[in-house]
Length: 165
Image 1 (cartoon, rainbow, N blue to C red):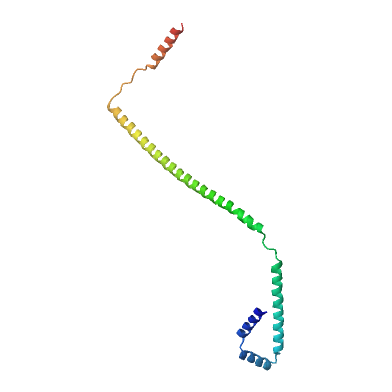
Image 2: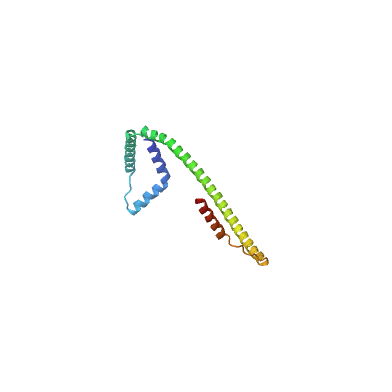
């Protein structure tokens, strides 16, 4: 595979230079460690290349055999768009109604507060007038009127008795 070979070349050149490989082999010999011959490295790279090729082919095979997304999901998505828009429009209208009601409630509260203040002012004015009348009453004596209720009621009763006879 061309892409695997190009990748392998880049990583091998990038990882170690020739001097480093020579130095590593010299140190390995001095320490008595086994060194890998170049044949093993090439065999190993061929093995990796074959493995990569088989994995790539398996991925292609699986990609071809996967079930693709059916058009039903697209139809459902397209059908849900008007519902989403209708819900959004309804929500916006409900929001506007709520704002209008909140404004009306605030106006009603202000009007109620104004009426309460006016009522308190009137009550204060009535109390002041009553105090003023009480002061004026002390200055001018007032004679009580005779009780006419009894005499008026008696006359009414008499008239009714006379009419019934």
